[in-house]
Length: 129
Image 1 (cartoon, rainbow, N blue to C red):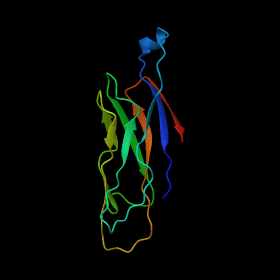
Image 2 (image 1 turned 135 degrees about the horizontal axis):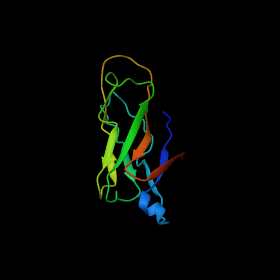
Image 3 (image 1 turned 90 degrees about the vertical axis):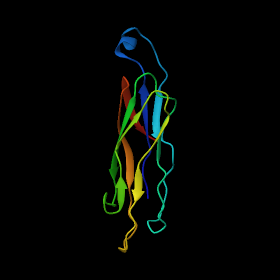
Image 4 (image 1 turned 45 degrees about the horizontal axis):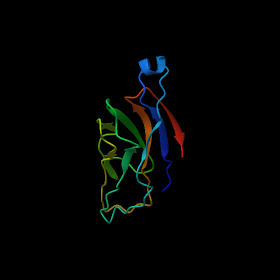
């Protein structure tokens, strides 16, 4: 399966910081695990983590995920929340994703998870790696 990793460039400036001319180092949100191929028959659980480049600051950071691909949620896999909230001090969050084993003969199917949005910071800009 093929998927793109999105690097989300964010800054932890407030509107007051920007007005005062304060500059902050860019922050990054990305997947901490690479693409993987797992077998439904093996009962494997995909290990998918979303990571911040450094701990969340004083305010929570919320990451919204989008899921696409040829596999069907509820039939081929079970997906928990597509919203991950990093509390101050946190750097990684797992994506709650499990394969559903069945006896139906199927071809190779894909689950593509992308970072769709980030909030709780002043601004962000998405760029593909």
